[in-house]
Image (cartoon, rainbow, N blue to C red; front, side, top):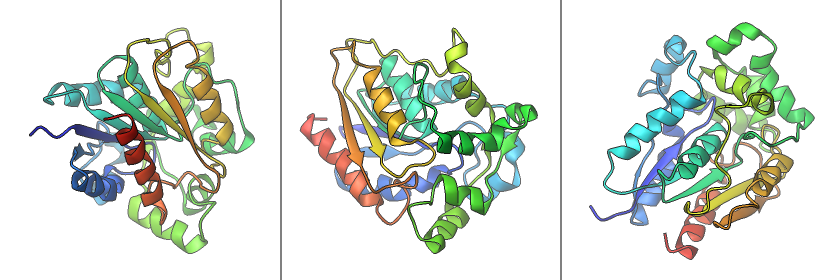
Length: 264
């Protein structure tokens, strides 16, 4: 097929099937999309919940290597679209020239981001409060999901998304991101100075507790030394659930519009 490949990368606590509506939309728009899970994820949410030990201990480098292998099997460099920690992964892949372009939706902080909003620390503390969680899988309670993802939604919609999409995820990436600025070769380090990489779109949501607006804008500033395209798109009234809640299509359409604007 001559259709441009698109690879979707989920973040912590969401299963790859949370991208299903996006995959359908992008296919309708003429792309060749897929949404592989992280290493250790099972094909279904139910199976992943039953076997959290399969994802335990996986770190950022493991996830990047997993998606890099998938990309090398494609006929052309793909557009990569990631949410939250998936936003770190797609920035790593773009910085390594493995992707044609990237969309980082409310991306978790990369090395160099010094902003530490209280709400973000509260979400990360789900794993960070116990050092043993570095090598374990961590699950959110319904209340923790409501704070980290569904705070801009009704309680009913937040609970429905929790039941439909939430899975245990490895604690290791949270530790790696938390100590990135104290670790010389941190896996959360991205080649922000790459001059020849493809275009990058970063989004910032005004009501996001997990990746507050300030983190996304600080991430955008880290690219100031590269002449490559780095754009920012803001969603003032959205929370961290913006890729899966009732307003997902607005975000997906914004990504599509940006890709078309950039002739991608």
